[in-house]
Image (cartoon, rainbow, N blue to C red; front, top):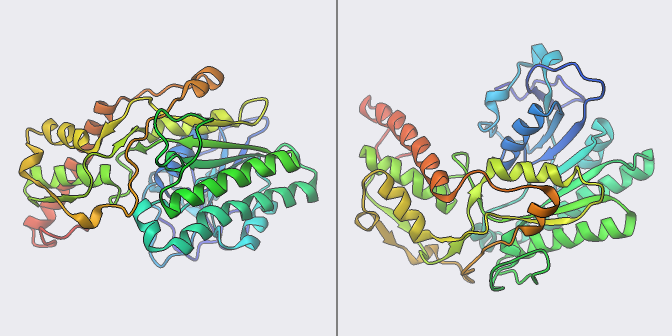
Amino acid sequence: MASENDTSGSGSGSTTNGEAPQTTQHRKVALITGITGQDGSYLTEFLLNKGYEVHGLIRRSSNFNTQRINHIYIDPHNAHKARMKLHYADLTDASSLRRWLDTIAPDEVYNLAAQSHVAVSFEIPDYTADVVATGALRLLEAVRSHIAATGRSNIRYYQAGSSEMFGSTPPPQSETTPFHPRSPYAASKCAAHWYTVNYREAYGIYACNGILFNHESPRRGENFVTRKITRAVGRIKIGLQSKLFLGNLQASRDWGFAGDYVEAMWMMLQQEKPDDYVVATEDSHTVQEFLEVAFGYVGLNWRDHVEIDKRYFRPAEVDNLKGDASKAKRVLGWKPKVGFQQLVKMMVDEDIELAKREKVLVDAGYMDAQQQP
């Protein structure tokens, strides 16, 4: 990855990434917040394959957090070949959002950035609301101000919603299902959703809400329950750990593959009129079912390794989320390609390979078996 002092690209303080350009009459330009996250990395790959130029906003950090997009990195000395560029900004800093919107002049804006961990949102509710809710408002206002100043009325905006907004409302949940959020994260996502609707109705901005149900992948953060499970399966199978501590095993979720879901994001912004869409597999499974598939895939019994820790229970539980994605299927022509068992096995396969690499370090004395790099 480039050093923090690399400033090639469109504007000072930016780093340049991407792949070799293709000849095109007019290349679309996309701006992505949260580009270094799971969804941001898959969406970047998808848009680059579509011929887009992609700009991502990243937070300043002492350590690089770009591992999910390092494989499409282009050295800044070859910046003329790059179609992905990274810029320092933050959803808590309105001036940086407006500056990069004016500089980049994107055709499409995807707001994927968030403090996205539900349990953590109970610990840092103020910050969660500032980034998830008010951050979306700042970005929408930056889009509105940019349009007003430039007359560019063709900008299209995508807001990443969450099935957590439905909370305790019984399944199946569709676009018309009432929200009943059960965490600061979910309440903040509800606010972002309605800010998006308001800016669409008040200012005529092309703005869509994607209400995405749980979507996972080998790139999922390791503190999310699905990746926590598959990570443990790999390490237990290789002999690096023996126990996995979890909370509520009866919570049921509609789990799909993140790579499928980013295509739905893009599809929403290609329609004639902006609208809101639920994106889901329409099939839900409990955490226990996830355990059974993941451990069973490698010939292990999950009951021999899993222990319940009450610290992992939420103050307000969400029991069952199951989406009704009939509108997305009908209007967008979207449907998931990866099923539940295929998804779990994909994640386990990747985490077994990761555990094997860790085992080499442990055996060589470079890493303690109980430590994860």
